[in-house]
Image (cartoon, rainbow, N blue to C red; front, side):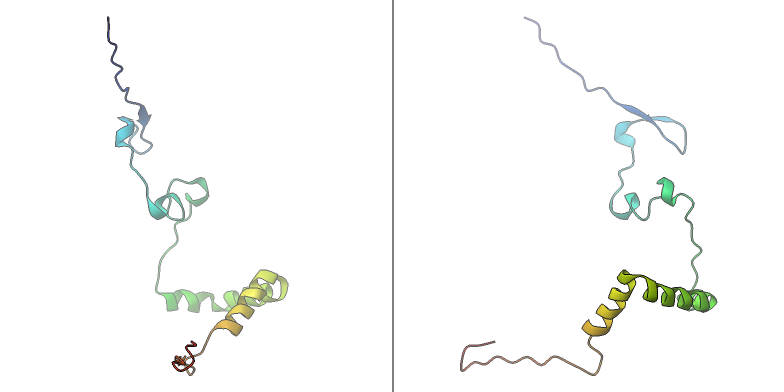
Length: 109
């Protein structure tokens, strides 16, 4: 009686950066944002390398354009209008605070 033992065959892949053939176990494992918005290999995001500056500097340079686009979206896009109305009606300002109390006599909250 013969017993055949099957060995696991290492699958090779070609690394795009180095061009080397590496075993599949050496493939980098992505987690979190690296396969989504922070991906550098997805075709849609390959050329997206924004320059990062201070928030106030970026907003000040583009303030006019951002305001005009915001106004146009408010007037023409129901989703944008709904987002503004939701924030306007659901956000509590700094002057209002919640003061809850338990009605211990009736057992009601």
